[in-house]
Image 1 (tube, rainbow, N blue to C red):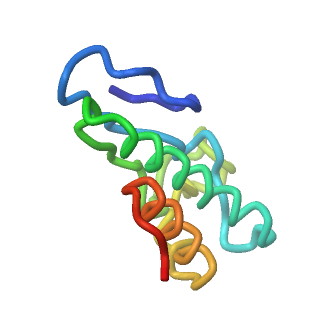
Image 2: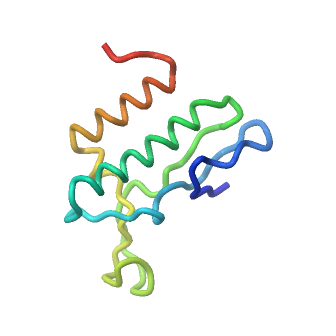
Length: 111
């Protein structure tokens, strides 16, 4: 199930898998300011937090982890689809924030 809203739709059966979230709904580029890049990362973290909160969610596939080539009618018109979490998570602060959310959602605390 693709779900681009937040909060996610509640699971309607066991093993409910979210196959796509956030992605194109909040595209970012490497030239975007720090606030936009962090917001993109936090949006993904919120979804992961919600997925961990209910055992009926089988998980989530955060499409897409990477920017990719596309046709000129999609995205910015430069034939690149800017979805890439990969470059955001390479930043130490973004990784740290995502880790905090993940640890909190699992009931732990960060030492």
